[in-house]
Image (cartoon, rainbow, N blue to C red; front, side, top):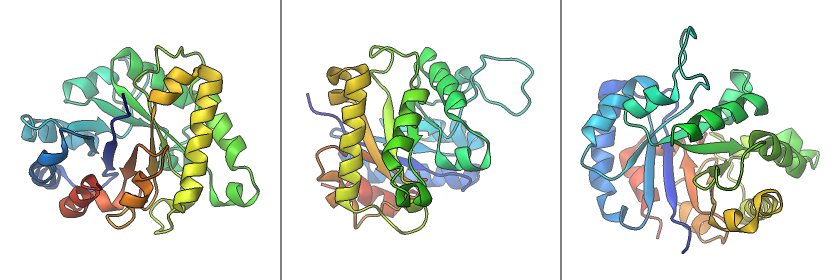
Length: 252
Ligand code: PGA
């Protein structure tokens, strides 16, 4: 069976509860016709998760969180557990987004713990990896990705990771309007799939969905999706507007 495409929106710190509910309602109508062929996921802020889930209750599109904490419960002021995400209606969770790595001290070690917490609770982790502009210029792209993947996925079996999604997001392409060329993206996606194959087996690698992220827009999604190893997209800016997100979800 082929890999089922996933179009995922990351709303970052945009949209309060009312705005998120309104946009999610529009999206659920706009994408209804594609949900038999692809998965669609939206990740609103924590506070909007439950109201958004309630709003789209009857629509088979998915809700994701933008982060998770690895402990089950305890005195961890401000943190959110896997169980809390599930009870708010989440199915997915974005882990290790470059903004969290850059601004909130996320490391490959914390990413690893968060993936474990997500998997233990049956949440689907979307592991974000990617190189900075300087790392690319210094030809470090592949070694950076190697590290992020090997450390992030340390200790898991292929069976554990059967639902894992990887999002390749070159940091220099996020929110900058600079997209990797389709060839650049395909080259890296192919490298990631090969690497997963080497460390976890080709069965898992063949089935794993690898998303591209970084300035994805309605006018560049089709050529990205035409690449063999690109199975979907993680979209920031262009996911905020229901119309443009829906156009992306209609990439075919
Ligand atoms: P962007 O963000 O689409 O605004 O570049 C992508 C992301 O951060 O996931």
